[in-house]
Length: 289
Image (tube, rainbow, N blue to C red; front, side, top):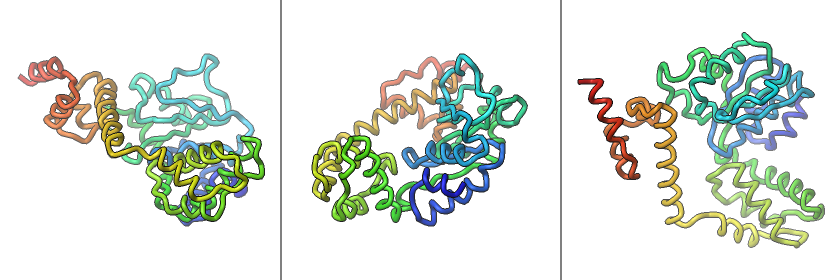
C-alpha cells in the first residue's frame, strides 16, 4: 500500500508525507472522502492514489464532473466514483449522491474534489446537509506546491522521465541548471503548471540534456503579461458571477452569499461586467414589499 501511494504522490516534504499518511489510514475504509485545495494542487491525483491503495483497486475508478449526467449503464457496483467540482453539483442531483455517500444505495465509494473554501461558502439549505456532512467527515486538504517546495526537484525529474518516454526520447533529462531554475520559479498553478512547463520544454528541444535557459524560455512564453492577467481576471470574475447566478436560479441574495459578497457589491459587480439584473432586483423588491 505504501509503495502505491508513493508512486502516485511524488515527493518527500513533510506536507506530502502527511497527506500520504492520511490516505494510508483512509484507504481501507468505505467512507466518502472530499479532497480540497487549490486548482492544480493534485486533488484528482490524490483521489486516484486513494482508490489505487484501497481494497477495490482492481475495480473501476469512474471520473465525472459534477455537471455530467450519470453514465447510461449506471454506476459500477464496486470501485470508486470521483466527482470533480462537487461545489457545482446541481440541486436535483444532490439527493442521489447523498444516498451513495451514506451507503443507502449499493454502489461505489464516493470521492470528490472542491475548492478549499467550499465548506465555508455553503449557504444553509443550498446544499444537501447529509451529503455535505458525509463529505466533510473525512475531508483531506491537498497542499499547494508553495508549501512543499522541496518536492519540486523530485517532481521535475519524475515528469521529465515520463515525458521523455512518451516522446520516444528516453535519454532526455534535466540538467542541474534546469532543476535549479524550476526550484526558483513561483508556481501559481501548482503541480499542473510545473508539469506543463516540463512537457513543453522537452517537446521543443531535441537536446539530450535540458538547460536552465530552455526552462526560462518556456516559462517566459507561458507566463502572461500584466495586461493578459487583468483580462483573464476580468473573464474569470464575469464567469464566476454568471455561474453563481445560474446555480441559484437567478436569486441574487443566495448568489451574493455564495460569493461571499453583499447584494450591493454583487449589483456593482454585475454593472461592471454589463450583466443586467433589473428584473431579478424588481422581483426581490416585490417579495420584500
